[in-house]
Structures are given as structure tokens and as C-alpha cells.
Length: 545
Image (cartoon, rainbow, N blue to C red; front, top):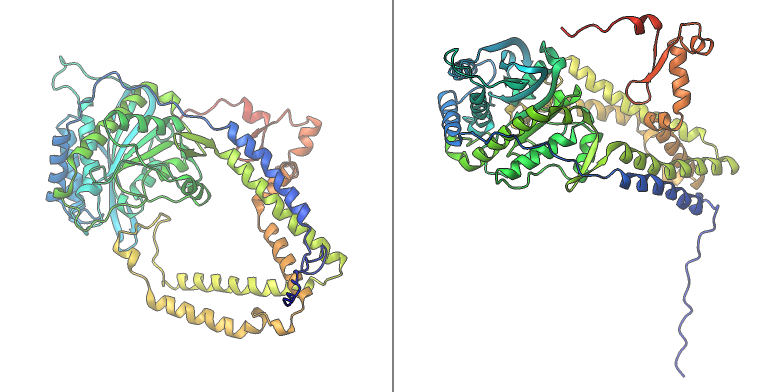
């Protein structure tokens, strides 16, 4: 007789409502269904943007001449670091190139503290081609480099292409010759400090006299490299260029025989919208609501400066992207009204999903978190689990990180960290890799000493901790997470936030009684309510300077 097998011991399922299973799983799964409605709504916002029509005139971009110009600039002034003699020579070089087309250049000179360079002098140059409309299209390229290499691709190629694009709008040598009349005003801009955080572009977007008339910007940066064409659409704020502008750039590149241009993937675009950051010069314009993009052969960061010589320029790619830039400019000039403004969206293939629909989906995905936190808090209240010790423990941990932040700021006040304008630091520059090692070690010693002093409050002692204490810690952490989400609070109580803003402006009572002569409430940004008195409405608008 065969021996009987020992009985299989089945794992007993944890009882619902116990300390090991405090959250109701059915309630949590039901909350997940709330994301279905925004998800279905997001599918209805998917559409394919249509590009602008191709320009009527054929391309006249001379790739060979552009390559010679780029080589001439890189060989004559290989070190164009802002503030140096090479930068001054590049200014004269660009001005002389435009004088050959009888285009007068204007300049803007200022001083700024650049990390790794100190206080230096920078200069923007631009030429204006008047058009029938005051709406302005800006074609730009930075002419400086990091000084590590000659900067043939980054960015003598973009500067040379900018000069070549001005040839179609050259002024006639005599009054008897005809002149090309542009439908819109065109600005050919050569910026300084582009390799050090886009300083020139930020300055121009902030101070140009006609900045309120700028409606579209095309930035040329490293367009003569070996890589495939790429469009950079990230900005300094969670805004993207007009979809029709991006679609037009894609179509013009394909028309010139180029490969399908690359851009950040789906999740990369979500990260760009959630944490806006870019190393290219379209960022400052997007932050001001101007539709702008960068055309390049590099990746999300500028190419390596070491070995960037004229012999490494790819003439075929330079010609294709130069013709594509000329085609984009022609399409904008003929149909600019369809490619203005900025919005938030995410590209999926050749279609886009609207940003507001994605925000609704993400907010709906927070509902299960909210339900779980509230359910766990209610469970602790029913079981009379004390939350005070957990609150004090969390306060101690937050206090430690607050001390760390204050110590970092104290080191900054003492000059331990590199200071400069609030612009992204180019990883290709030497200062980006020059870490203040001694200051970091000193900061680590200070923070470590603070942790040793307060470690008895920061370290969890499992031998003296009950399951109720751990559960209370989880509940307090989840509730604190909700308190630290102001966007979620505004989304859940928009009417309450609106009434609070009205009371702050002192217009709620007048609006209800009609004593203020009428006030208009309009949206200014996301969920912002603005009260406008009658005197302000009756006053005519001030013309742009």
C-alpha cells in the first residue's frame, strides 16, 4: 500500500478589514473604472494635423555655397566663445555677409554673467525684411560655439544657412530692378550665447521692440551633421508649437527627399510637458506663446564640439535641410494664419492627442489613490489607531530635508555653487563637468552630521514598532501626498477656488449686486477668474509700440 501524501496546506486568504488587508480591494478596483470615461474621451481628440501648402516658387537654396560659407566661418573664427575676440570677428563676418545683399543689420549688445566665462559682452544681430503684414516670422541661428572645436556643424552650418536664406530677399542694386515683396515681415536673427543656454534667444524674445508681432520662429541648429533630421518642439513651459507648423516642417523635409524627421517619443513628450526643459533656442519663444521649433541633425542635446571640423560636414544633409527650411519659410509666409499660437499635445505617429484630454486621464488615475487614502484613514479611525505619532515622525523627516535645502542655500550664498542666468546649462561646456567637489563634500558632512544628531527620530525601530504604527505611518504619508498636490485640489474644487479669487479681488459682492457697473469674468490661463471694471472696458486698447 502506497504511503499517503501529506495534505497540501493552502495559504489562508487574509480577511478583509484586518490589519494585513485594511483597504477594500473592490472599492479600489471600482475607482479604476473612473479612468475609462476620460480615456474614451481622449480617443475622440486624436486627429492628424494638416500641413500648410507648399510654396509656389521652387527652392533656390545653394547647398555648395552654404557649405563653403560654413567652412569659411569655422576656419576663420574657430573659437567663437562669447566675449572673446573670435566672437567679435564673427559679428563682423555676419554683418559683411548681409551687406553683400544690401541688407542693413541691427544689433543689441548687453553684458551677462555666463557660467565658466564670467561677465562677458554678448551681441545679437538681425536684418528685417518688411512685408505687407506686420506679423513677423523669425528665422534664427546662433553663431557662437563652446570653443572646444571649430564649431563647423554647431553652429556654423545654421549660420551659413541663415545667410543663404536671406539671398532671396536681397535688395536690388538699382531702383529699376524689382524687389521681392514678402507677405509678412521677416527677421533673420543671429544670436549670441546659444551654446550657453540660449541667452541670445531669451534676450531677443524678452526685449525686441516688435516681440508682440512675432507669430512664428524657425531655429536652425547643427543642420549639417551625419544624423537624421530631427524636430525639437519642447519649451521652457508646458507648451508646444502649433500642430500645423510641425506638420508643415515634416512635409517640407519629406518633399526634399529627407528621411522622416525624428522627435521625442510618447513618454518623452509627456516628460517634456510635465518637466519643461530644452537646450535649444525655441524654448524662450514657446514660453511666451510664440509657435517655434528647431530643425537639427543632433539629438535632444547639442552634438559633441570636439572634432566638429568642416571636413565632417555632410553636404547632402545640409542641402536637404536648407531647402526644407526655405520651404517652411515659404509655406509660413503664404499661410501663416493657420500656424500661430501654442498648445499642449502629444504626437502618436502622425497624429496628436490633445493635452487637456491627457490631463483628464491622469487626474482620473489619481482617483484610486484618493479612494485608497480615504479608506485607509477611515479604517484607522474605526480601529482607533492613533495617528499623532506618525504625524510627528513625518514632521521630523520633512524637517530634516528642509534643513538640507537650507544648507544648500547657505552654501550658495557663500559662493560655493556656480551662478548665472536662469537658463539650462549646456552639458557640452566645460563648466558642466567642473563639479565643486570640495563644496559637495562639505555639504555632505553637514547633512551627515545633522542626520547623526536626529537619527533616533528618523530611523524606524522595527522591534518597537507595532503593525498599527506601520499602518498609521502609511495612512499619514498618503494623506500628506494629497495635501502636497495643489493641482489636484484645484481640479477637485474649481468653483471654491474661483469664489476665493473673486473675494480676493473684492469683486464678488459688486458682481452679485451689480453696483460696480458690470464686470466681465473671463478665463486667463487655467481656472483663473479675472474681474474687469467698466472703466477698463470702456478705455480703448493701447496700440503696440
